[in-house]
Image 1 (cartoon, rainbow, N blue to C red):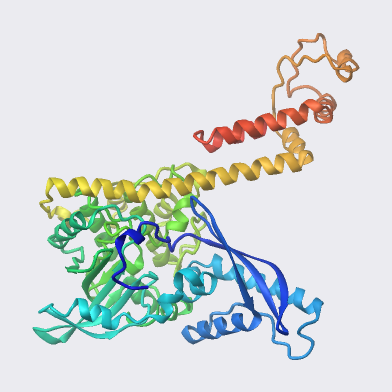
Image 2: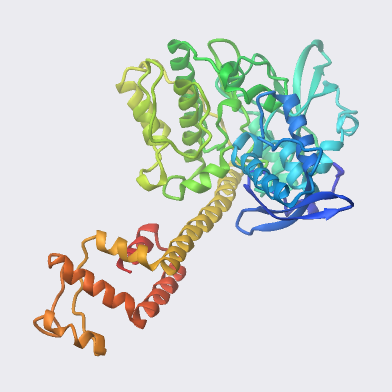
Length: 548
């Protein structure tokens, strides 16, 4: 893929955060070896499905490449067999084991976001990124630059698949090394090139002690070249006791190297992160990319938030696959996404490991800092129906808990943002959230479909659910012959049957209702109602299911 590709082809970008689902359909014999037919689906507003054909040796090659990054990455592949490897029974056993390995790849957030796994499952979209070196091409872009020059190309030190990193030298001080990032704009890119340049210039002019401001260099349309300070590394690097310029999986896969920070350091970092977010939110600067990898450690006492240009470039959030599962009631804006990322940082501080699932209800609280209340509010499951707290409310709560003192708010810095840029900020935030809302709606609809499927295909379970609840059946009237035989149990044809009656009477009514053809009609009717009520909340659909 050429880096000078026309921007017209960039309109339909692949979102690298969309989850992949894999299913081995069957196996076939090709030229004397067994090949597995794998169906891969990229889930999103529209699902895209394709087939790949892999041999057992292809899985072994992938395992070996992952092993070089970290010896603790294990896909649990079945053992190699030299004799009888075409036996049908062995092929079926191996197929089941390889299916388990595929599930491990796509369900683990770190593996699923790695270039090796993505290129294995989606070679059409990612193979070029594994082969192509951009050193010469980026060097051509920097040819006329008088401040920076390329030093060497780095491996994938971050999780973004379409971002290449280089070491760069500042010509005025060749001893100082800087991190130069070549980033392909993402699927949420809204602005045209001229407007994009204007907004990026405005971002580069921000001055705040808690925000890392990148140097944006002239770049071809559809790409951005930015320069950052390396310094100590990220907060995640500090927690894992690793150096920042190593490959992503090599740095962060082994959680045994994760360490606790002193309480005083944790409190200081929490305070700085919150006030950095407060500055961005108060000035309506779109962010939505907070995680421990985007917190730059300047020294042991000071940190900065980095990556503030990501939303402007249309890049998806690291936790996007989690956000769409939480639902619209929990995630309503980019500010909520920042608070959610802050909750993950609190979890890493206190639990000594990253949280690799969308929510958490139980915390072991391994440190002396009592942050459980804040984490329960931020990382609550979607069923809790709790609203995401604001940064200001978290700051207030921590002040009341005497974890943050009452000294001067370091977010008092104000930046003068032009009116046109403010309007662009609003549009950028709306664009980023619109796709998240679409994915949330699709997942909610899939949940309703599953409920309907269970009702249609498991009526006994449905009747069991009905018996376990207290319902009122009002004005039951029927002209069927089956109902006539049971009229002696009621005082009149318009009588009311309540859950306070005898259990025998309720059970007989349920059996009567389930055995009639009317029950089948009611199931279809309620299924139609739930499918048509996409705009209703999940509680409404649950009510329909319960009545059935």
